[in-house]
Image: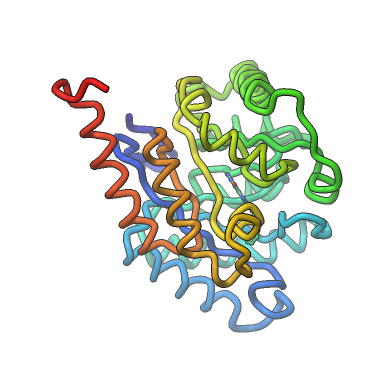
Length: 284
Ligand code: 8Y4
């Protein structure tokens, strides 16, 4: 499946692709206001493109559990110069990771063509902004807000909850004039979920995929990998790569990661196995 993007670009999702994460936030680049933040973010993005990332996801607000919100002005100051510079230096597809309508608009004017919103366009003005700029949109499930989501997550049926939520947000987008062929969906690993919830979502990912829109997953470096391996954040690459392989085998079309090169290798293996399981001679 191919998705038409603004500016005549196309996102080819006939095979699973990798989205590289570039954070322009104080926790990844000192105080977030250094003179060399932009070149460092650009270098990181260009390296990921060279390694084979199809999409670069640029974010200026940390959505880690408990992180403090930033103002739209501050967020814009962080991400817009990076998007403008990357747009000049590369033809890659740029995704803007934001919950704010104002940042969505400016980022798309600066060259972003996917809106990656962990709040699924529920913020004020977000549906209208996304419709206006004609970008593709990733709708992600989250229980609660980034400030509160990991305090006491609970579900009676996590997969049903996520499926119902994503159906409702797809309908809201279509009502707001965003055609469904521009939408991506995401179960939101780690966003208001316990380990058991994250594992059930990964095991039953085919039920999300069955909603019929390309499915994006992001497990890279997250707490679930730490809980399963006992490893700190900087040591979770192999665990994330394993999770990416499983998600790809289960039909994920975009894998969001901090570790582009090894994730691409894992995606290749999983796609080959998936193709074998779907060939006529293989019946089980
Ligand atoms: C260490 C490093 C621990 C990073 C936690 C984290 C997703 C996403 C994020 C996702 C989509 C994160 C912006 C959270 N996760 N967008 N964004 N899907 N679509 N946490 O799963 O990376 S940020």
